[in-house]
Length: 278
Image (cartoon, rainbow, N blue to C red; front, side):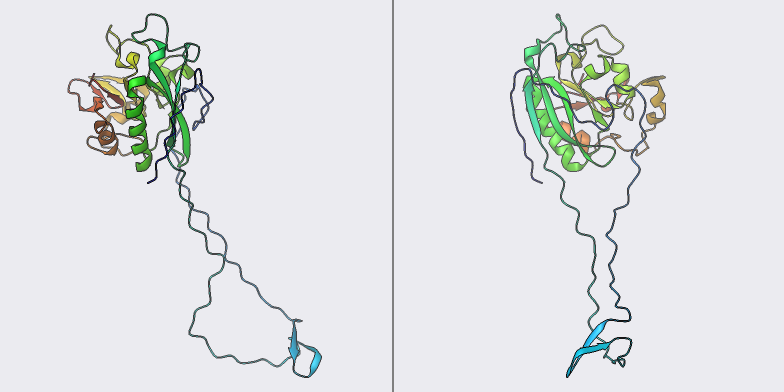
């Protein structure tokens, strides 16, 4: 597969990101319904009565209605098929752009006192497959020194056609992690405390990412986050976007030195990948 990666550094650039659904909603969106390919209809031309057929020595000719039928020998060659559907065009090449961000860009997710300055963060605009089977461009905010590794991971996931329902900075959800995961939004940086604790989360450093968090929930005993995703505690399911031990998603992150929260023991954080394993 051809992978085209465009690295662009533009101060303050944080434009609109095409996503699979409207920004900011916290409603669940059902998975895609498979769509049958649309084939072109075969075209058949019929010659009816009244067609002029030229005859020898008669410039005017005779009509097919008056002409005697002409017998023809059967052909051993099957007729050609017209109107057959063309082969589907290849998907666009994977693309990624890296740009600077400002405090204004991250007004809901970054503030003074966060463990990393905003200058050490980057916006990644990357191609990804959606639950609708189409290619979209999503945006992640990550630590500057992890931008290249995440571009590599996303390129591999794109090659696998792994679907991501939506990918927006958590600022779209007012910095609210619960709203973001309930919307099955894939996101990275958020200056917040660790779930269930008081220290900084790895997300606050831009070195953690939650992937399709609704179908890959956080599970600790009887606690499931988001609560409405309890059905996905059953990891025997094979719904779109689910991550399983040893699958292509886990392997893509491992290849870049990122570790999976689904391999933890007392807690299972199926959505979570980080560089530190925390």
